[in-house]
Image (tube, rainbow, N blue to C red):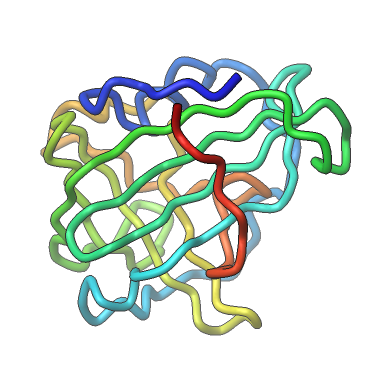
Amino acid sequence: MKAQIKPLISLLSILALVSGVAVQGKEDGDSKIVSAISSSSDLQGTWVSSCGKIGDKNLRIAASFDNNQVEFFMMIYGDQKCSKMTDSSKAVESFRLGKKVTSASGDVVHEIDYLSSKNYAVIALDKSVSPPALIFADPTGANVSNASNRPTKLWRNSLGIRVKDNGFKLPSAK
């Protein structure tokens, strides 16, 4: 049931595979995000999405940061409320937090480099909402393997926005 994905494949690679599929969730708003990350210690802990849908799959995505390592979990559910998990996958990455940059859409984000898979993206911590939300890069049409062309658009939907939940029970690896 639960499958360990090779460490060289990050969650961004997984999401890039399904990026051509419509994602149902919250649409981009007019408000601009200014990332509140001051160091990688702000990322520590487990950040979990709400239930979302890609194609016909109901899923949740979690990222668990510990020091300079992040474990990504994709959990697939058999119901629309995401209460009955049927499958999961896991990717482990080491990461490096980069500088703050302003995206084309005006959001102030942080570069994040996933060192194991050599994928590059952005991330933002939004403390203007309660609870604070960690927002990941939108993988749609992204060239995650080129640092100079990293995606900078934030994935503002139920799967890209995650809230801290250190009590969330992550699936165990086989």
